Image (tube, rainbow, N blue to C red; front, side, top):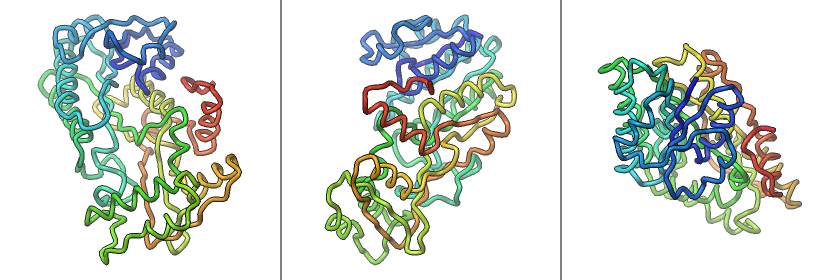
Length: 335
């Protein structure tokens, strides 16, 4: 199959194109002429077409002649207008070839729910595909609108689509900062400024002050539980696993017209992550108890059962890979 990947040099895209090539697909990629991450795809047997996805003529030409489109390109952060324009032009281009495209795969985000409790309380846990969608940032709103565009295009033109929603995609060494005192403090501060979050203290208690006093540094690993001993939970996703999920959505007919959550095999307990970090760094983790359990989860049963999603990035594997990257290795593939 000939596949167009938007953003092939991005965090997900550069790993996706390698997996597509390994599965004997032909790859075309859209790339900005001055993309600073271009080296990520240097030497690969892919066709790169330079241009700007906000230009409909360019985007339409990029889609022409391919069998499928996987849309990974986006800007993380408050780029609502630009991300929406990119999504709109990619969708419009796909509509023009709706009768020829095998499918259009749109990468959304778990932020459309959202599946963490520090911004807005989840309706329930674990967060599955049926959870109410209440995007609460410019980024997640643009992702949600991208989903609506794909669904509308399907109704209007018959465009075959699938939606994949990653949960906090990580690569290289990024997971190493996720179980630290700094992250716990930031979560508590953020939640306390927003009444109604899952970590909000209605009596006004600012729990982070005691943690700041006890911590040796902000980088110290933090082993945090609630007062009943239930660990804080965090379910991100390795960038190689989201690439794998996208390939599953491409190659499975069961993916058509469906949306799929994608994440790690299971949520990571903060004490386990802190223990691995502490042993590697030769430091003691800070033991913390608070009145509530933090749950950042993402149910992936649907993707596992319908399209064969099998994520490899459990906690130990992701941490070991991050330490290897810290020593100068790359993590474009699981090898």
